[in-house]
Image 1 (cartoon, one colour):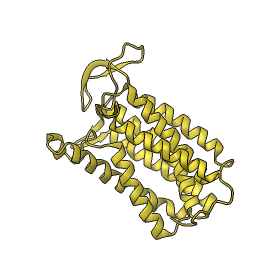
Image 2 (spheres, one colour):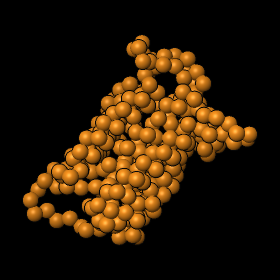
Image 3 (cartoon, rainbow, N blue to C red):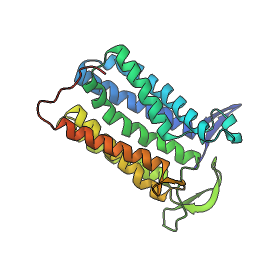
Length: 250
């Protein structure tokens, strides 16, 4: 864990920002490839990724701020600890939908590309959380790979589960599985499977995280994750129906 990778005079290169940026670059490369293959619209990938980055940043930050408005950390706009993943998902999704509609990107192309870009970008972005020690680690553990984050942005000297590492490895496996399926299943089905797998991963990793329960014995991220699983399963089942009707644009 190393929040600041190196300093050059007054400039700092932070691991969190670097890997978030690399995650968006990877997502852009996959989106461009898949949009071109599916819809001949690889040119739209850059705009969609910028929309996702801006919408995701604002959504994650505003949602976190709404929950922690009284915290002194809320005054630091660029603190890597001041974001929520579900706020980012909501903000990013809304921005991408608007951008896709304006550019008339087909629904099949958008969701087929997003099913692959999202898990890959998420996996790489979580490496930034590990470098930052931003508090997304888990509960205490005595496993051989447990570690402490004494110099993290949310420091702890206790040995804990390195849950960002778990998420990175799991989502890379998810990406690899979906990549192998991309020619075998329809885009809507692929996106549904992506939601099911990503939601399941987040629901399970929350069992090792330090978030408080909010309802039904579940944490807030688990409630969002469960909604993703249900929505993804419903989408996958719906696309399996014969003679279904789908819109051609978002």
